[in-house]
Amino acid sequence: MIYKTCVSIAEKTPKKLKQTLSKALKKSDYAEVRLDFLNQNSVPEALQLIKKDLKKCVATLRPISEGGNFSGSEKNRISIIKLIAEYNPFLLDVEFNTLRKNKNTSHYIKNTGTDMLVSWHDFNKTPKVSVLRNKIIQMKKFSNNIKIVTMAKSINDASHVLSLYSDTKVKLIAFSMGEYGKISRLLCLLLGSPYTYVSLGKPIAPGQFSVDEVKSIFTMRK
Image (cartoon, rainbow, N blue to C red; front, side, top):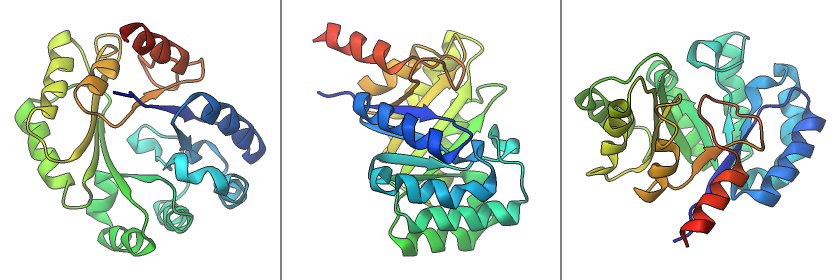
């Protein structure tokens, strides 16, 4: 089985984003393009520059309230999300909380033919498994592609998140952040995650492996 990776990219200019994306896709199956790190007025230019590679990109425009870097108004963010959808990336990552509050956003994205990745993060803790399972039930109303990420304060926290793979019928990406959650970024691949998030070198998120580390680990496994 081939285990796939997705390099997280957070650059501040369209030109630098294009350069880093080219490097990332030479090493990785996919790249997560963190468009929230750009000035919001630069996003259209960035989309034009990278449009040929977007079929291998998970596009993200995460607000500060969801652990991202977008500081503009929510109205502007939603309009940019709709613009991104028109470029048909591999996946468009939209937060569960955003979709709940903006039902028409989901309809708009679906009409463009773009597949959504509905995401939910808890940057402070790992809720009970029952809470997480219920979250999946709510999230799959919007898409079959679901991402759940929590902060692990113990190995048990990480195992609770990984247990979500046992009986789910969705395309699930679930793992934990932090040192206790680090191993879950690898184990999720063995349990059925379509890919795991990695860096080109410097971690974008707590506990993130580099693409070279993950490739070497699974090469050794063969």
